[in-house]
Length: 201
Ligand SMILES: [Zn+2]
Image (tube, rainbow, N blue to C red; front, side, top):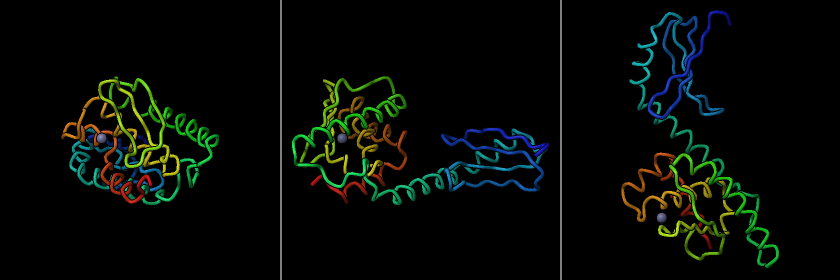
C-alpha cells in the first residue's frame, strides 16, 4: 500500500519487522506461521520511540518466541529425522544408515558451528552407544554420535550436535557450557527433557 514503510529492528536477539502505516495504535504480535515478530505503528511515529517501545516489550517478545518454539517442538516430536523407525541389524543396511546420519550431521554442523565460533570437529564418527547420544573428546576435538539418532526427531539430532559442539570449547557441563548452548538453542531444556523420554535403547 502507498505510504507504508517496513523496517527491521533488533530487540535482544529477536528481529522485529515494523510497518509504519495508517493505524492509531502500536501493535506487536508473533506470527504463528513462521514465528516472526511483526509490529505496526502509526505512520509518523518517531523511530527512536519505536525502539524504546520495542525494548519495553522485550521480555514479552522473548517469552512468546520461546513458547512458540516449544510448541513446534512438541508438534514435531513424533517425526523421525530420516523417517526411519528402527536401526537395522543387517550390517550392510546399518552401514548405509551410518553414512546417512553422517551426511545429515555434517550438514547440520555446517549450520551450527559458525554460530558458535571458530572451532570445528576434527572428525565425526557414527556408532551405536548404549547409554549416550553423543560424546566429544575435548583434546582431540573428535565427536561421536549415536546411530539411533537417525530414528529420532530432527530437533533431537540438532540438540545433540549443538551440545557436542559446545564441548569443543568447554570440557564439562559448567555454567559457561550451558550459556553457550542457550545462546544458540534457547529451548535446549525442553529438548533435553523430551530426549530423556526417548532413550537410545
Ligand atoms: Zn555433555
